[in-house]
Length: 525
Ligand code: ME8
Image 1 (cartoon, rainbow, N blue to C red):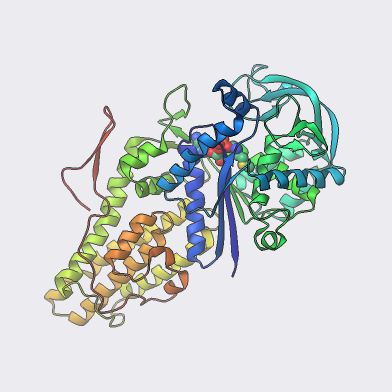
Image 2: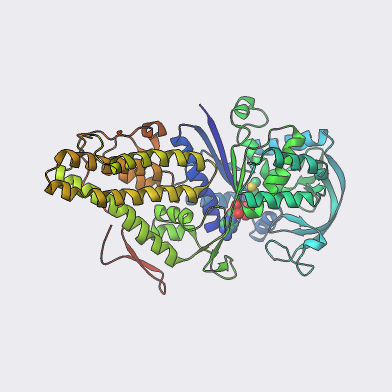
């Protein structure tokens, strides 16, 4: 069985999870679910990044040990993933003893290769971003170029990784494997960055203790990024479980936000080359969300709390919105109005109404029982069939590449086509004209199309898809549906009794002043 190993970043455990975190993880979930649907052996990893200076400082402020502090924070992430219906296979923590061992092992491999040496680091460091900067990177000589907070001067003994040695090898990698970094414009950014020249990277610190000790010198702890990136190896058995490692490594897809692409597409492959390990197949960087035109920030008080929006609007409504509203890969803007408009317009009207129409017509003309297919009568009968099958082919091509918005467009075109098919084939007219055989084919085609839509939407909206499957009386749970059941038209069994209609996506009203969400008075869909 083909494998598919997909990862999210491991999140900084002391940041309260916000929409941005939910975004990366939900995207990974969509891709993981789709790959399971394709019949692959999926391993989907997420977790928490728990070492570093800022955690040590935050724990101290609270009078806790760093370990007590991080232990108290992990459950919030796990709760959020449950709420968002995230089907991860493993949750890794960088404080896991196995991980500590893996990081020390890879450090030593690079060291033995001659790629790590002791020196002195003098420069600037942003504690919240855990990133090093040179003087010229800074804004106004003192602010971090990423988060715009004040940086601190660091001067200390440090181990360095010979990143400069890997400059040409990295450029070769990007040339030989054009798919390694996506989207394309991000790939170009990375190539330009590397062409400007790479400096050796400081990979250890001595001024604090909360980290993984350098095995040959316990005055030093390993730089959090060297530590964090290694999680992708730890989770698949590195260094001891070679069977598991050979099964899953290299990772098929690292999904990250644009801010951490450099770590994944430059530093990470260099570390792996040095350690003699294979390079992941692809790193995809998505864009960032702003909120009503502004950067999300605690000080502005506009951080979107994923727990709250899921509670108010529904998990699938939020999941759908994230990939429908903004082309995955680009930056986008969140607003409550846009969310409500997608829910009412596309979920309640386009999709919800489609289910209602089909169920009520099968109910009216065939007492709720799926008729048998009597062959094609018109060009449209052929077209609906072809479109269902070709949509699946397209999804198969684009979802594994993380083109989540394009894939949803394809699905929505099919939803639109099914609505169009019903309007044009007008079952009510066929009834009037006494064309009962033709009516059977049209009703069957409508129901069979819903079966395809249920499967197509499963990765994006798993619990709604489950409800759709119940309405269609599909025997299997949606998570057990497999692409091979959708290779030919006709999987829906004749004689099956459909369930009564149910409102899949209620229309809602949102009061901007109070933040209250109500069901809309005129219910459609
Ligand atoms: O970077 N819009 O963790 P992190 C979209 N621990 N995505 C956003 C966002 C926004 N406004 N804000 C943040 C780390 N993100 C490291 C990772 S991996 C070996 C170590 C995304 O908790 C961001 O792009 O800061 C990134 O993918 C994830 O949230 C980062 O989370």
